[in-house]
Amino acid sequence: MELCRQLFHDPDVHELPRPPPATETAGSATPSPRCATPVAATRKRSRVEAFGSTEEYEETCLLGEGGFGAVVKARHRDTGEAVAIKRLTDPDPDGGGVWREEVLREARLHETCGDHPFIVGFLGVVRDPATAELGLVMECVGGPSVGEFLREQRRRGRLPLPEATVRAAMWQLLTGAKRMHEKHVVHRDMKPENILVSGDGRAVKICDFGLAMSMSESPPYDPDAGSLWYMAPELLLEKDDYDALVDTWSLGCVMAELINGKVLFEEGRDEEGQLVEIFDVLGYPEDKTWPWFSSTPFAKEVLPELDVHHRSHLREMFPEAVLSRQGFEVLDGLLTCNPDKRLTAAAALKHPWFAKVDALELLGNEEVSPAALTNKELLMVPVVPCA
Ligand SMILES: Nc1ncnc2c1ncn2[C@@H]1O[C@H](COP(=O)(O)OP(=O)(O)OP(=O)(O)O)[C@@H](O)[C@H]1O
Ligand SMILES: [Mg+2]
Image 1: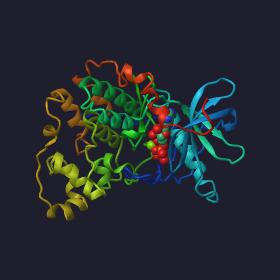
Image 2 (image 1 turned 60 degrees about the vertical axis):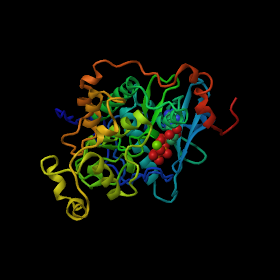
Image 3 (image 1 turned 180 degrees about the horizontal axis):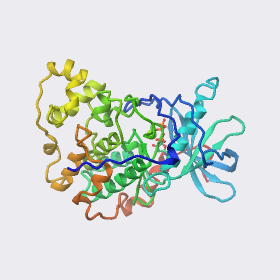
């Protein structure tokens, strides 16, 4: 498959600092460690600099919670606009403002990409005058996360999803990723929990720029970033000059999960175990498929102990009955171990599988009203009583 690399150059994010060391382990409730790098001054004044106040909003419901704080639904007191606010609590108020800079870094990266139908809209930063806590104001997305959606589909015995649905969702996600990558931003944490379904089920939107980085800085980048089950092999092998292709690997994992609702590589308990699981399915790299691989400590120290084979078993896991030949070519292209041979978002979108894309209808009519649209409402815990 032809490799189509993006040439990154975008003045808007040029002055952003290199991303921080950050790791988030799949399934863990712990939040992502955040950036400890000061944010450089920007040339133009953006919504990130022009802080609003939390007092402009009335909080209504809790949408999600993490170690970072909480995402709440809120209503603008004057305009009535419904928004989501990601409230980020400083875990170390004596930390000399490091946390604040990390929040602003997330805000800036999100703002850089946020004006797109398949990326959660970014609306600004607010400050709580009483506590000095900062919040990221976003478009409020009405449906569940793709992770929640798939769990529900599984519970109802509605998997695998029709190929046309997987194609429509992947087209949107790759279109969103292409936009991010054109803006030099690498998300680094693409996974079903960080993809939200719109209230009408017709769009999927990428959220959570907590681990994102800007490619405008030169390597080395910290390879210890992402959620283990969705991390690309080069990250697991600690390559420190990776690029946007780490996101398309993760989207390959998401595509596999969209088809059958199961995490593709979920047995890994650490980086080494994750690599073994990946290579057991896709075949162990060899010099002709990935020359760099043989120089890694994994290849030198771990490989000799293993029962190595070079054949991919991916098609056996996704046979013709669930995925056409063209669909499989996209999956296989995204899940290519050597990033130099992996599909970029732009190249994947040119694949004939996407020649015709249906409208997305993730939430069927009977689910939209009222049962499943309120799926999310059911998950909401009132912050203040909801009307
Ligand atoms: N704009 C939004 N609209 C509706 N719900 C949202 C929105 N943003 C986030 N959420 C909900 O809040 C949850 C957590 O948000 P997010 O993924 O940004 O935080 P996190 O993973 O805990 O953060 P981080 O990785 O930065 O520590 C999401 O999975 C989703 O359920
Ligand atoms: Mg998240």
